[in-house]
Length: 124
Image (tube, rainbow, N blue to C red):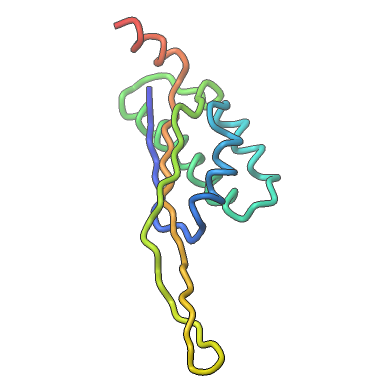
């Protein structure tokens, strides 16, 4: 069983978000949520909520299909950070000049799956 979740237009640079995402890639989903709770980076809260949403999506899909569900069996199969649109702003400077401020955004995607499901799909 697999479940996806995504969040878009997160106001953080993709480079900063990838530092946090690399910490949880391939881990058990419940352990990843617990470890992100104690990370000092601001984006870790957004990543934690995203993984919790993917777990909830998996629970809903399992109930809908009538399958057994245990969130401790879920692991993070794939998690990516893509660049979103950049907002361009102007900051006034001395002598009538202007500097450009780039406010970058990111799109986060996560897929959680059960390890049993990954084995069964590989056998086919």
